[in-house]
Image (cartoon, rainbow, N blue to C red):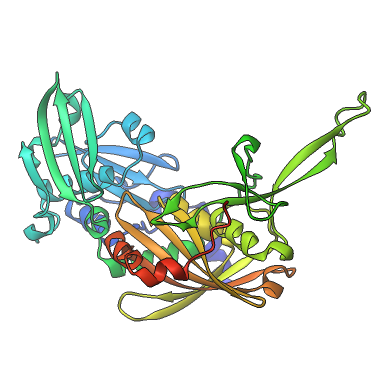
Length: 387
């Protein structure tokens, strides 16, 4: 009984009076260094960004929809820039500037890869009022160059490597644990059938099957194509015409085209498959193991929300068994999650479809490039379907 009373009371408390949570340890360290008490950390609404001043420096604190703090930094980029050109660079540099100015982290080597060509860390606070805007350039997917300009002249400029641990201000093991935790709690409640542009459809080896071509990842067989079936249906809105048949395009999902159905399920988060799930056998970088089971929709949607693009390739088909590789690539941060997927067609098309997968998180994309350079892999993932 006491437990229920506590839960009821907690639900009535203002957000700021509950224990504040942070999405990563470095943010909690920043809050502690800045001596941000519960009143300073109380959002007026959710989600939101709250601003305060410390030693004449503007500090931005961002809260999630659940009230968790997922960013603390010195503002360097306009809201318009953040919305129009999403990038992991913004949070990284804003926190890094806060770190250097307020000495949150005593390890001065942590940001040694950030090289200034104009200005310094001390130049960046207040840069929004000293410049006309910023520009971020990706140099051969190896490094970022960031500059702020005033009347065409550089006010500040710096360069750093595209490294996901650097960009996240976190170690790989910490990022892996956060990925699993957040995926367990994530739910995509949005339901919307994917729109199919019939003018972009191409023929496949199967005359009854069309393909909506997507992007490829290193080799043609690893892609995010969608496979489509077309059939004629009656247009119930047209009551005057005697010929009221129209063509309907739908992403295929049937046992006669099992491999293409699996490919659709692996790259399209809005596939209409009821009660589907994927059991992820998690292999951490430190050799620890974990298991979680979520819907495929939630799995893909969460990874896409984090900036990943899905690519899938069939490895082999033996009877009713299909195996393939799913690459969830975050090009902007320089990593990919790799899931080796296995399924049996009986499970895939049952009332509660279940996939099995082994997942390796936060693999550097440079390592994946070396993997595709092996000649045997080009033959191993070899089903393309496209004429």
